[in-house]
Image (tube, rainbow, N blue to C red; front, side):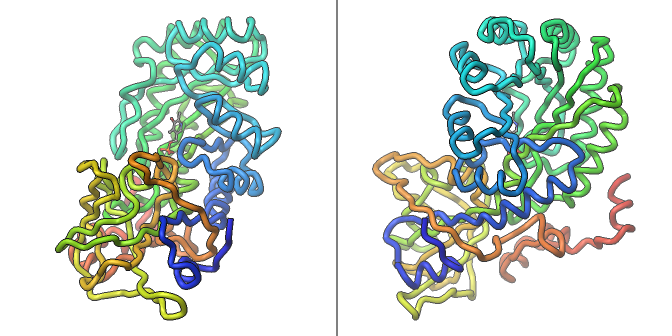
Length: 424
Ligand SMILES: *Cc1c(COP(=O)(O)O)cnc(C)c1O
């Protein structure tokens, strides 16, 4: 991988014909350090958010050496780039062969489950191992997530006590509970509420749990989606844990995906054609822009124009545009609005920010597109939850006027008074 100081340096040197994904290991390191300093427990990185080797290697260098994996290829990836790392197989539905290979070949001892049938599969495929950590995934009722993750997995709370008891009896080693409040969770109290529900199920089962895993869901910052301070999430989890009926030595785990990597990647795309307010790009929903198309998230953008040393960032005046990707599918459409200079034209480059989570990870080769190279850059991400001044997002003036109500939340007082008011 080549390294450039900034994306503009790459444009100046290369005028790339194909999309370029920018990797910002510095941003992953900042987020990883924040989680290790702030979360009073073990941090497992949810590999599916971004399985790039540079992400895994940066996390290990920064001290995050535990990984939430969901498949044998993810296990092999972690084994290759983080030898000796601890892995937890947190997919509640696994093939028998995957369980056996994870346990016997890769030394994975932690497995999630949400049914009696899966529990039986885990016990059989590991030949009745006595050193398993069995994690029962609960379906909790939550509000405030932008993406629900309780519909597909998790045992119902009224059926949970029976399964908790069965899991407790099945292992001589450790047993625990997990849940997922939903991805991009905008409400910190969702964690405390989920932990209260988990605690009730544990009490009804009459079991002792060794692990409480609060899952992922920690947010990142996007235009129009500015979450509360990350510290508020930690506070909610601390309060939730204090109220749970668990023993002193019960471990607390989390499995962030998005929050560790969202800031760390952006993609450089080229404008192939302009039709009024529609821009036809060389990357789209089958490339890195799945969420821009299917969940209609308006990611932040920057524009570069020109070649060689004359290439520069162009700033305004702006107007809203929508994007089309390169494939022939009419679903390859990103409505935005994306605020860009009104004179944007064919040959300009657009950098789309905040695509480190579920962006570059979603790339397909559909229709012959999607072949992006990766380059390392050292500039700051377009927005951050972990900036020195707290949350920061750079929005152009025109877009701020349009989204005034959302931007106002950014300038809320950050002192103690502001904080305690929010907590009630
Ligand atoms: C996807 C996933 C995560 C990560 O979720 P984020 O919202 O990206 O933090 C964590 N745990 C499990 C079990 C998941 O499926």
